[in-house]
Structure formats: structure tokens, C-alpha cells
Length: 313
Image (tube, rainbow, N blue to C red):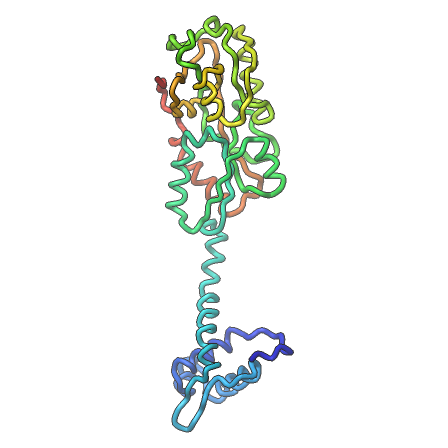
């Protein structure tokens, strides 16, 4: 039984000395193993027994045996010493970003593009890192950064309009396409003209989600002479595409989202609408070691961020 009046912790040296005697069951051999003489080792074991108020060894002239208390301490002492030996490597791994937790937020559009490949490659290269993924729009991410809830995030915005106050790494530039119901007259063209869109209602995301891209889209619409009625707002790109599938209207989406195929939906470019969307990886400086490691992982794979110039059917 431990004397609760003595709050001083047991030193690792005392545990190493105890384990050596317990494994050798001979004070002389244990002292030799520890590169010390036997009398100080005997005194150290006696001091440990007084500290624990328990007899750890039964000693005779011919033998040394563990008591039940000693056997219980041996298992615990080995675990403590093993953990202590592993501690420097564990701390160094965290300091290098090879271990720990990465809290990463992302907008839904990048999940249809390079994000899965980036995550797979990072996880394969850093198995000691736990990924905490959170789908979140720009406005939600900004609040999460302010609250210290995320380490980095992928955000969607108009070109060169990333949120201020954060470090920014642009990772993906892509055209913005129009998702149309396949039975809409405009869908018959491979490239839609503004006149084809007369009377077509618009499905869009709320402005706070990505103000710069929202403003760019509505400016482009005005320049085209298309001033549609907004039939519905929805937060998720997938929801917008599903509403298009239901025939409720048309929706602007980044090219990466055109990989999302839904019955009754076609994707078209609009003549004269030079709309571009940019996705950036953002973080608050200084980045944590594991976040810095992820940032360099993404930075080193620029080819993954290039969209091939294809036209969805």
C-alpha cells in the first residue's frame, strides 16, 4: 500500500533499479547490469520499499524472490519505463508534424475534385496523423478559425478574392458552368447563349457562403442581359444540382461539380460568361506542425489541382 502522506513521485531511476533486481533475482548481477556497486542498490530498494510501505522482495542468503506486491509493481514499472522510453520519439514526431491531429474543413466542391487524392496521399505518408474532416462553407470556416476549432480549410471564392486575415495557398482554378434541366430549351445547345436562358429561374447559394463568387456570378449575369428570378437558395452544391434535376431551374457550379451526375441534369458553358472560381487552402499563422506538413503536401502536388478541359455530357 502506498503511503498517501508521501506525495513525492517515484523516480524512473528507482523503477529501473527495481526492474533490474526483479529480472535478475540477484542483487549482485543487477548491480553489475546497472553499472553500480551492490550496497547502493540495496539501499535504493530499501528506500523504495519504505516509500511504498510494502515489501517487494523476500530475501534469504541463497535466494531473492518477488513478493505479490513486487510482482504487481513489476508489470506497472515495465509499462512506465516503456512509455518513458517512447516519449522523446513521440514528442519529436508531433514537433515534425508526423503525429497528432489535423482538423481540416472543406467546401463541398473540392470534394468532387482533388481533395480525396490529397487526403489519401497525406494519410499514406503520415499514418500517425488523425484527420478530423469537417464540411463547411466559408462563413462557417471563418467562425471556426476565430474559435480555434480548425487548423486549415479549403474555401471557394472568386479569383484573387480569398478571405483576409488568413494565410492563403491557391490550389484550384476552374471555370464555372451552368447546370440545366435536360428538357430546358437551352440544354439543346452545346454552348448556351444568354437569349436561350429567358424565363429560366435561378437556383443559387446564399451570398454569405462565398460573397465574392456570388457577386461575380450576378455581375456576369447582368453583363449577359440575363436577370433571372431566384427560385431557391441552398447551401450545398449537391442540393443545387438535385434541385436542377427536379426541374426547378438552373444553377452555376464550379467545373469540379460537373462530375456529379444526376438524372435530368446537363452541364453547359455559357457564351460570353468568363466566370472562374478559385479554391484556396487557408490557415491562421503560425500553422501547427501537422497543418504545416499538410500544407506542404498539397503545395507539392500542383498537378492534382489542374482541371482537364473536358465537356460533361
